[in-house]
Image 1 (cartoon, rainbow, N blue to C red):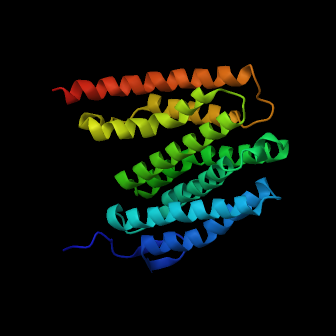
Image 2 (cartoon, helix red, strand yellow):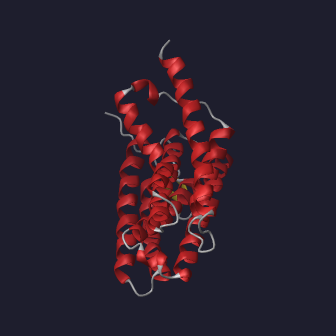
Image 3 (cartoon, rainbow, N blue to C red):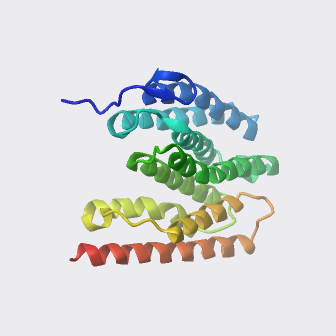
Length: 253
């Protein structure tokens, strides 16, 4: 049986002869402690939050290493996947904050720090795709990894927005839409068909996460906060309805 693991290529950081999995593992040795430090930056008085952030980053990174060995087709990891792995680290910090919502509610400095992390994760979203195309390292694995990090980011931010008491529980729909769609695809297989590339879908994703990120800002309060979230949700629902209709028409053929 042929191995799924590609032969060593030239690593971005470590030179030739290094496998993508080894390079990713070494990157995690830096990123996991970085997640802990970011947790301490947001909440200096709660070291447990730093441990949770590091644990989530390690768990996500371990899952990435397993999938990398099985599905990654290239001989190099590339800047693109390192950027997405860094984004995953930022998401781990935000997800850790979900376990301690009082941190953001009671401290404007912590809220601005969380906003900075979310903003950095969002800003890097455009870098990994550009780096993959530039280095000719595009793959279904990389695109799926990027999409799942976006989904995890949206869910973490939606939970934080709800916990902030700025918007009602309905804001969770902004983060739960993608997981719900994936679960529905297990029942109706035609929903799992690949969708064509589309700038509109990508734009809606940016608006969705951008709105959720803005809700972290202490200055964004009711009545602006609910209207901002409602506008993003309306656009997201329209986008999912459009894609579902497209898939249904082709699945019914």
